[in-house]
Length: 110
Image (cartoon, rainbow, N blue to C red; front, side, top):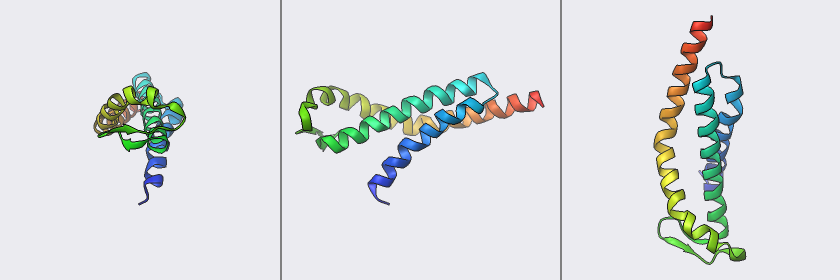
């Protein structure tokens, strides 16, 4: 699968969680989806922007960023790398927790 398709999916899936959080009945599930989806979507979007604007990568270091953005992106690189790795592990867990909380809230309400 091309890297562009993977990048689009990695941005759209958490963005979908952010948009669908408004339909949640459970308040904890709402906030897990809202905050988690927003944070993950912004992190992935920044990672894709850095990948397109700069040479090198987040792991080995950024080189030759366009438009002088290296000053901004170089300090963010370790934080974004850690965030992406943590969210790839914690994201599905938080999604399952939100789904269980939502199912329990809907069962109580029905």
